[in-house]
Length: 454
Image (tube, rainbow, N blue to C red; front, side):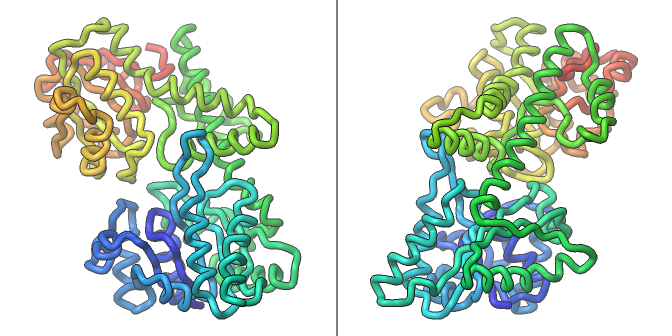
């Protein structure tokens, strides 16, 4: 099938590459010429395991192309995926300007029937806005209003495992309207996703608004579990309980399960913060406060400061002259995504208290540098107190303590003897509970986890 992907960011690239892998002829559009130049020269502007190799393979086979040509992109695909960004607006709502702009471009150039797929994470009612924008452009050209049918097909991709998630999905959600055009679009989508349903049917068909809400509901539920466990971890610290034992105790209940029950420094990234905020905003627009989600957001923001509080409790509020090693900058492992990363808050707070930070991350240091420049804009002295090194052990040299923020596998079994030799004091603040407190005590390491009984 001929498919167009509008937007060659995280969702667009993964979707385009994976659909090309299944034999489809995919045209990826982006209006950023620098991004397209990178892709056409064999590079990939984001880090995602397995994605670069898949893109290379399908470009070589002629099934995947990248361009800035809007007219060519509209002409190419019988199915047009809108996978552009929906950044949070100042009021917390999703900014739909890029989605609507993509819809208008389709309306300006379309001449044959197309299925338009909302792949971006968008609030309930966005499909109506996309349809209206396309119809407005069609009317200007005297084209039939029903030339395009809009479908909702939200993505459920975990950063760091997105290719695997797309190729072996646990569910595919497709929202269509119960009209002749909608039924034709449903059949097109069924054909497109047939290779992913060979072993068993993974597709859930529903109306468009339900599909739009499903995406937000899923992310909000996962974010709620994270904030809930972080609340319990903070209580465990106060009462002397071990949150890991609690996690195993409640996770063994089949009604609850173990997923997303790990305490830490709060969630970040491009999805959970934005989607929880947008869902709350949608509810307020309809006269309803989602009090649980408001609490989830509040807990998450406070949790980003929890390691700083532990450091303050150990060393005092004045950290002048102190130096901290920090392992892990990306908001989660296997990605270079620094959006809403807890490391950014932690570093800013340590610098604010007079400390300097030496950081290491396996893949996110280039993106991290851009983030720090934004975070310390107008504060050149603060920026000078943050440095990065290519080796995690090198970050420890002469530091007063190690702070772990992201749970990369490379950090799980370090040479603790070397860690102790390099640090001026054998102290670890572990924001991801990578190590057992008892094992650290035996080694002579002063250890502070999140909700771990020390």
